[in-house]
Length: 307
Image (tube, rainbow, N blue to C red; front, side, top):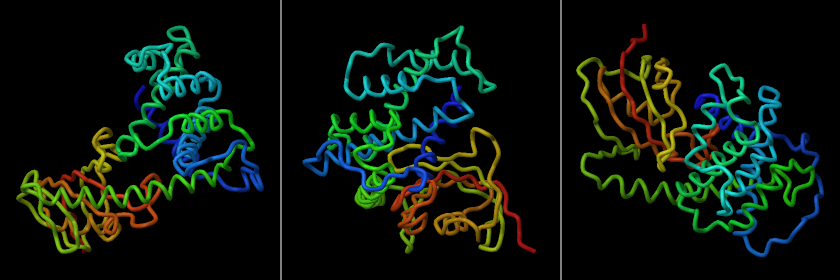
């Protein structure tokens, strides 16, 4: 179940970021309501952007007919508004475990589509709130306007108060500024912790386990297990669940990996704290936002020499 739901949540992120202006046909759209402050506007954009991705994920042809979008919206809104929940938040996982089968199908004899969809809405809301808390902006968000955005995004309006792509850009710009500040604060505090080392480039690391084998050169390839996280603890990628390690040349990875792994020996484990300059920079990549400092737990399994 968790793999199936994770797929949907991941797709929801890609769905919104991959949308084009041509698909939306959103030129010269008048505002439905007025924003008096920037906080109201960005809160609306965050809600609209998240809900737009959710709507596209749960109406995708691969899952068409398996969810009730209106009930997903109800779960989202009830959680965000602090309303009495129709389904206990503590029960959502068990309901979805029963509803979502390992083969990607659903079992409506065990749990109704409406109840499962409401539970999905609760999970979506929790994901949204967790991202705001992780960025330390949850107290700055106008909940009323966040909910307005969610409602318009889940209704799939042709003319929301702010065009979808404009809202996406607003959120990206806002998060980029937040990332710059949070990353600087994090790295500044992190390097004062005993056991954390910092190189001239700004890469920070700590040794979890010293290896005893060979160290790679920049021209070599490596086999590693890794888990990548944001500084708020959210995991964005890992080889651990699949038990399929990464294999590739050091010349093809981010500079933080090149430097960090070059200092390791086979059998060693390190935690790398990679500032955006040594990761995906000012532009980001895929689900990695601009100016993101990233944390990688890396185990160097094998060095393969270039010949």
